[in-house]
Image 1 (cartoon, rainbow, N blue to C red):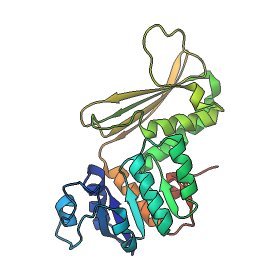
Image 2 (cartoon, rainbow, N blue to C red):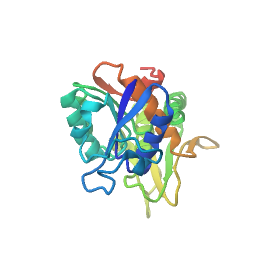
Image 3 (cartoon, rainbow, N blue to C red):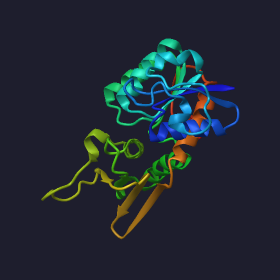
Length: 269
């Protein structure tokens, strides 16, 4: 039985992950934690996630739950997740992280910390999105520099980072396939008299509104034709199920930093 602690258990993703853990065989919810001033701290897990009382209370610190858990699932934010990684590394406990918005420096620290524990770090846990990552790499390789590349992502009005981690990952996958430096080729906004589009640009545009769970479209356009690849998430369950699957997988792995291509067995390089 894999024992799971959920970070940010009072949030939209955290509570849904906790519910799905309860519904999944061979995995058990043993703890949940929030930031210390969260109103759920001290309450039974059921009061923030639903379901019958379980006798476990929401704590305000990861250090209070690590001794009970085999793996921590974390969909909080980059800064919090990195702090949780430091604690997990010291205790040699596995983690699954779906937080986005990591800076280059934060990712470098994550890579160093993961030398002490196994960790799945992925901007999107959806099976469909991870297949999309592979498809866009294949399409970019086949089309080469003859097609312009544009990415459009849409999310709910409450999302704090932009572009989404998934959009940035799509852009990086395409840049790698085309041999481009995303720091130089990425274009995140256009306004005013900007002149002709440069051939090496990878456009990444952000839309925010309403309750959109998540939509990503990659467009490969040339003079006379275009190819569009789109993924639309209809609910957060896609991400939550992927996280639960990753938690069951990562506890069996040696130390290191992994992503969903490793979990799903679709890594090609």
